[in-house]
Image 1 (cartoon, rainbow, N blue to C red):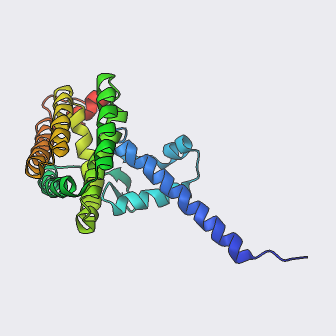
Image 2: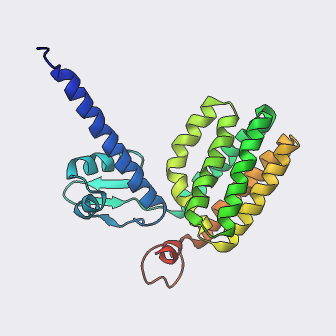
Image 3: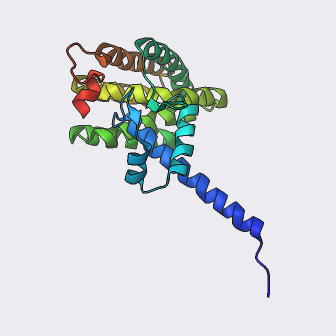
Amino acid sequence: MPHSNPSKRATKKRIQRQSLHLEVADGLRDMIVEGVLPPGDRISEGKLCEEFGISRTPMREALKVLASEGLVEIKPNRGTRVSEITLEDIEEMFEAVSGIERLCGELATIKMSDSDLEHLKGLHERMTSHFQNGRRHDYFRLNQETHNLIVELSGNSVLKEVHENIMIKVRRARYFAILSVERWEESVKEHSEILAAMQVRDAERVGKLIRDHVYRTGETVKQTFHADNNSSGKPALYAKNN
């Protein structure tokens, strides 16, 4: 009778555990980005374990992942809290992203194929539909996919790596902007202009439009991040969302 290999069984279990805690990290990351877990809030492991239907071990491993990304702070004997965002953080992040995405947009416009353009056009049409139907969550996901695709189409692996690292934090701040109805509408129009410039292969105009688009998003976040007379103690946009 053939003997089973314990090392293979152990490896399989380790992979399953790793997959679980990364899935939990993805879920928690979305909750932080969308304000379900606002900046400064204490994280209740027990409550979240119940919500996710898991034990404390994968939850704690997931929180370690988020801590390495700067989204949560784990303090011995004091628990875990969602990291705060300052106006200085927002300003510096959007300065960096506007420059990176401008260059990526210019390169992508030069290098992308016609099928790549059709893909971007399809994403934009779906984004517009989500906007018209008030589907904020779906719009945000496609918006992120569009920005990431433009970076991918730049064909520059260095820019892509830097962008990926920075977007872990910027994604949370960027979500604030579409909670402003006026900015959300402006953003859709700006995406239309960017796509139109890409279709005529005007790389310089694409770069400028993307830079301005990201800059305006950052300005919206800065202007609305801290509101006066907010009794909830949360940033105003989160208060509107909850």
